[in-house]
Length: 240
Image (tube, rainbow, N blue to C red; front, side):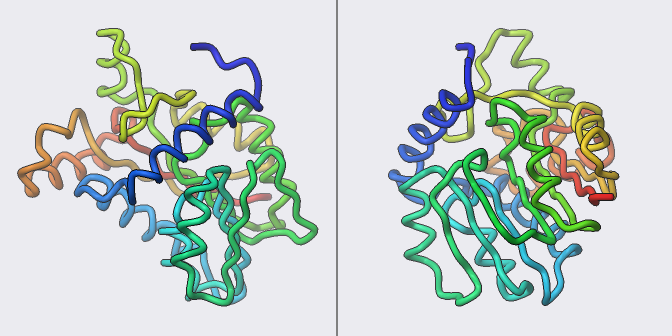
């Protein structure tokens, strides 16, 4: 299915994630928890008590809740009505605000110190326009943190070889684009960013090891040794 516009991509994303979050709280198996913890470690390096943070595609606010004690203000943004409702229900912090909006339609009079795009960029129609907008929203010296699937990963290459559709973990088909680290690096440089840090996780298919935690953690950690072939990439960049 070829996505023809940003509006179409947003419609499909909203539909998919409303369905996903209506079934409960997703992404709580061992693999997702490992990815989540690695993501948090990276994010916290760039936070301080004066930080103003925007979490794009915040879902039910899991990351927002974890980082809010370390920031001045956190805004969570998502286009799923169900996800934002859950996020607001769980919110107990005074420095947190959740907004129902796509990133393309989001506006802010004040700039941010950190923008998070956690598993987000692969779901947008025009990635260059998105990175350009992030650059305008960030203060000079501000940070953009991206996590995403890696196009060069052995797992996804095998999926394409056998003509399997790549879908999000819960099984809902969404307009996923694929990027390699080099793709993201070129986009970031184009829009005035410098790569600060690159991390990786998961080498090869990991689903079969879910019932063996030791093996799962081993496969997860191997991704750091072979980042070019790893399933997931974790990138931080600074705005010049």
